Length: 284
Image 1: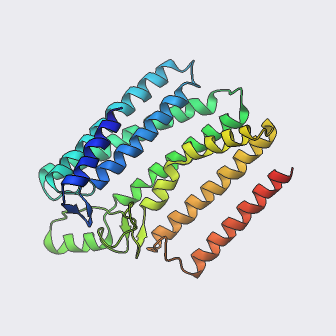
Image 2: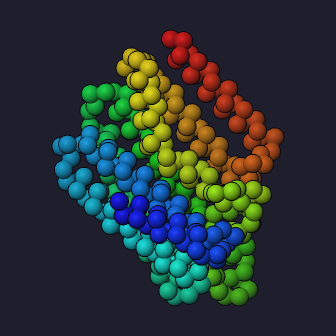
Image 3: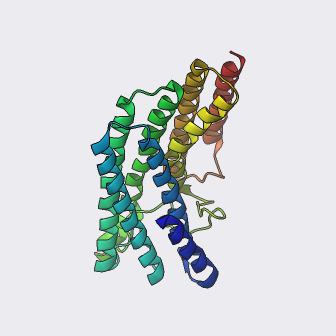
């Protein structure tokens, strides 16, 4: 509910505030984070309903996640209000403190999600397919969140500049192969010309929503539990493979929309393998 209120505020900013930050409307990032966090927290609250005996884990992970993500969003909104970037910005003492608080907070929140994932892996489920969807989906989501570690590492260009100027105003980037702020895909801002770590980050984060939805859709079609379990493993394997390909492509400084021959071959192999696996389950 807090994130919905924050989203409304950001949407107002998109309409009323003409400023841009790294080539995007100043309030686009706050809006995206409000939506993403609303989806994530609602998902975790739903997952907690399957962990009735894990009272302490639910209390610590739930309250801790809520507090940390509210702090995260507040910093993002403050920086948007100031007309500057929230991530990778260490140009002033205040910016450096805010960025370090965000980084430390997200590190703790990831550990809280790992604790919840341990509980999910240990919890027996009446619906085995849904249980596996939650276990594998949450594990892939943690891997997706962990790609943020690649983003905060200083780039070679930033290190070279710091050696000359003895000052590093920006440490890390979403974009690989160029500074942040170049031409981006409409709505998301992912680089159209270079690698962008936000692509695998986004895909990985949302595995915990995608896999359960696949299971629920199969249940509506009347699939047996054993068949739905096979579907979960096939879908999770395909999802994780695609996540790996996108991460590999981004680290090669290659845009999602401009794959070279090697990346195109990897995507083709992934697509064919996925279709064959799903066809075999459909026919079984």
